[in-house]
Length: 235
View 1 (cartoon, rainbow, N blue to C red):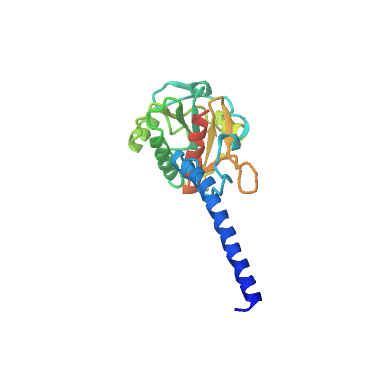
View 2 (view 1 turned 90 degrees about the horizontal axis):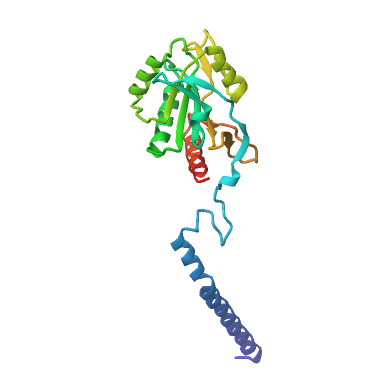
């Protein structure tokens, strides 16, 4: 072996020793912390040594106070926004004879309700936009047909003009009578999420803009809604 080759080999050996030492120190100092975080549940998907993507309650935007309302439920009892005070609740506009999106919206809400079954601080408000047909008796049968037994899910009816005022101006969730569409009425397929203090809440989209309301027809919307209900219940 030439002198230069010997020196080169010695330098490589020292490099390997140095790298091995660094790896050893890393293992001693860092790995136990990672193991501890796994045990405590602190490591989440996307976590890279404390770079977290966990969605937290502080991320939820306050849109403003939900409008006041006073309506009659399926049991002929008056229900107001005060009924939901101290509760997290989801609100939708629908009608019982809807042949298009309402059945899917109701089915999705039923799935949501089952996840929070028995919780006194969670509720649902389903307001009809066809109150001439949807009397308390009709809504009671509609709830029974859906298999809804929860005391905190109110199917609400009242004066049509009053309801449209709540929908279009209060929540800014479109609802209208239209003889040209299937079913005679049209409305958004959205759900509003209201916190315990009566504020409309939502998350932000990928561009940092409030989504305002949750898609009541798609799995992604229901998943987001469910996650955010859990966050608000913890407040």
